[in-house]
Length: 218
Image 1 (cartoon, rainbow, N blue to C red):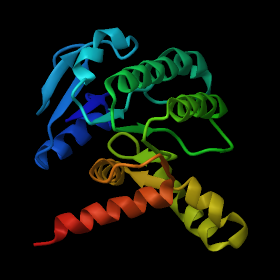
Image 2 (cartoon, rainbow, N blue to C red):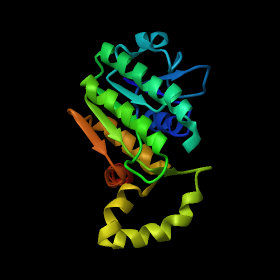
Image 3 (cartoon, rainbow, N blue to C red):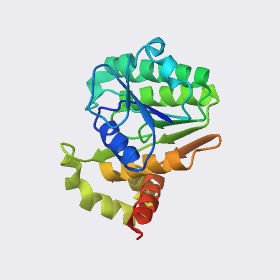
């Protein structure tokens, strides 16, 4: 059984359907009703007391709550939503004895969005301190419907990846697609971490390729 927060969002709604198609059982936290192929749990991601009971009996916890369309001027929102929701999720997961916690963070360090990265690093710190077995994914920008403008930067990424001095940074801050993120999340759940595991962009791409290859087999 997998508990998912942020299940109605950009990434969560797609992940829930992917997991359902693979026969996985889920409980999805929402503040209101939702048309999802899983058990719906009504609650507030900012208050674990409203949903902690539903976490009991689950094996994995996927946390996808966060401020939409991050921007440099949204630090107060990051602290009010991202930071608080992770604190509450970790509390609920720890109390329920969750075997594996999955969190989508962000690539760092990076030249922009410092406030966003700072808050996400604090969130990662809470997960580390909890002692939970966890997988942390660190994409930089996830391409998908309504999130396409960085496609114009692909030629620059290609050049940077060919130059030794800039290759590591270009890979760490590389672009991934929503399909790659979905597949990598599925992979992380099918092969839970023992301890703390961090997947950067190259690992996200590799994990997604493994899932896509398996799905392509007759």
